[in-house]
Image (cartoon, rainbow, N blue to C red; front, top):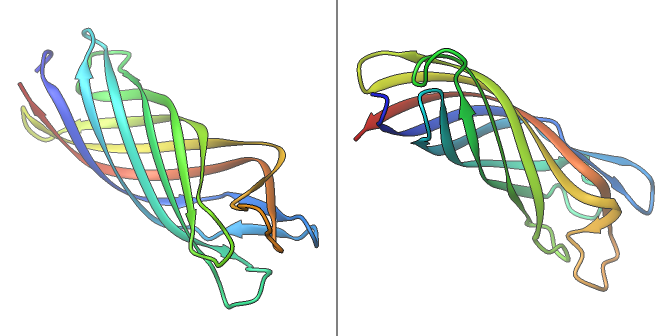
Length: 181
């Protein structure tokens, strides 16, 4: 099992994240809700792995301060990083982290997608169920750098503008992990 690669499918509950309406100064929150993800874990040594991690959440802005009832927002994180097991790779407590990009795609008229640098950091527990299958329980924090009060989602001529310097979110995840050679 030490030289095996891993693949994990996750289901989660993501929360947090906010922007500011530049015109009114009103805070616009992201609704909490379900998320899903996947990771590919490649062995580095007896206690660590290289990890490629993808996470997705479909959410909406709340309250939506512009004409129309609401606006959906798709968040896609793609990170490369690692996992460290203090005892032995493949079971028990671990820490995880990575850096990459967040793609934020709103469905509101006049708003354009935005891609920004982001990172994640978390802690988890891997419970082996058999030689090649285990359950992962994780808590991860995500931070997406927007820029010092930078306008996002606006592609020129926007009447409505949202700003933030960073967007932070948390995610509780449970995953089924499979190991293979």
